[in-house]
Length: 183
Ligand SMILES: CC(C)(COP(=O)(O)OP(=O)(O)OC[C@H]1O[C@@H](n2cnc3c(N)ncnc32)[C@H](O)[C@@H]1OP(=O)(O)O)[C@@H](O)C(=O)NCCC(=O)NCCS
Image (tube, rainbow, N blue to C red; front, side, top):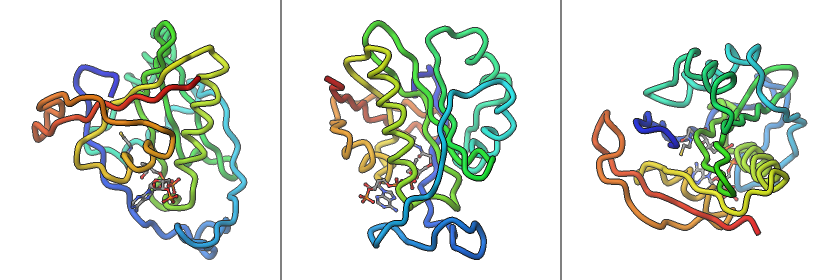
């Protein structure tokens, strides 16, 4: 999203995060939700394998481990948060903090954990951290077809502010540019 050539986002799935499999909650989205006990922290190099699992499960053009390594070690604007459940990385999100604008690069949750409010909590965590870093605005690009992500962003006040034609190289899909004020 904050990259010149952005990869695909797969549609969010209604994955089977049921009590038998994950031991977290059997609640389904839009029903009564039991809060899944997750932790958040800044991503470090050692998290790359776990993040790659989320990455491959979420995007058809996943970033490489080197891309993440580069982000963590060479890009001083880049900041990534991981979401942990039972010592396992189940989601991550990233942003570039440029002047007072936070540009979201990625956000993804493992398919079997989707639909339980965790993407929303992950984005909230990113927003809170962006605000702590004095960011005033937040922006991102999203495939015009990715309604699930767009609905998540709308909950944080993101609105569509423009289109990047043919932004996604795999199928020349347009990107919707969204912005929200953090003030
Ligand atoms: C986008 C993504 C992070 C959302 O994570 P999630 O944990 O499933 O989202 P949540 O359960 O927190 O839902 C938050 C909101 O997203 C939207 N949403 C989530 N699942 C949805 C679905 N199946 N249909 C429609 N809207 C949905 C809703 O607005 C929802 O709020 P609501 O439950 O009050 O209606 C996740 O689907 C994902 O990893 N997708 C693949 C990667 C991707 O597309 N990333 C975005 C790149 S721009």
